[in-house]
Length: 385
Image (cartoon, rainbow, N blue to C red; front, side, top):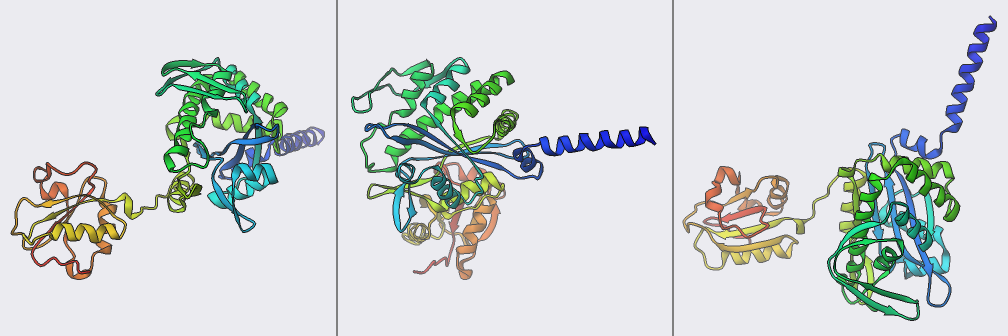
């Protein structure tokens, strides 16, 4: 009886140890849930107060997929009946307000946050021995207010932490931006660097990962424990690099305001988080051909489809002008896009559905680049107004 009782007590003790030694990060992953973390990178601004220089939401899934969405600091979100940039929200309200705004924007449960400064960024780069990167366009920039002086030539470079920091800090435009390209340029440069850094991290030993996680626990401001940071580091390190996602959230510029593109944002987040892709009409590229010999028929139909959101890759005459009926052809992998076109077309002009192979690929040799769906218009086709 004493031996049995002893074994029961030992088993209970072991069970309790594993129950309470697990962090919430581990338990969340075991429940089949993503773990999402808000990351804010800060620096000292021109007037001595900290400013948010980098905002991202990073996550890891139970299946071993990692994802990071970067958000431009200039991104304007509704706050207290005004449009306020994320950078200004940091200055006025702090990290928890940005966390709440990011949750609403991405429609994700972001339970954790970490704020890091430039010293941490330099430490990570130097910890992995630097980062090799191909610089597409040289950067020569001087900002005496921020004491920022950059001279990075184009070509293959090996960055230490300090040089890497200059590379991602460079904005390349004077605010407010006038178009998407001005903001996207910096975001894409940051992603380009992050991809190269991730390559180095994947090859780093677990000892290096522990070192970085412990340094984060000491140097970063976060609501996570050191054990949780280690669990996240372990999960990210073990993630499948082929299944990873590193993207800037879709946005557009309107009158100097950088605004979220909510339709594309929903598509991106749902595709990554839930594995669901929502197709929008502008993703469907249609070539329209006049096979009835009626003047301007393909052009009129293309204008009608374009006005309803589809992308017209080209209009032209078909190989014949005596088709008695119309045809809707889908190229390989575009069957769902052809479905979307068929659903929109009025019933009285519904074309016959075929694949491009069934139609005859040789008859489609001169398709405009990017075409996914072909609409061949036959006798009696009239889209109306």
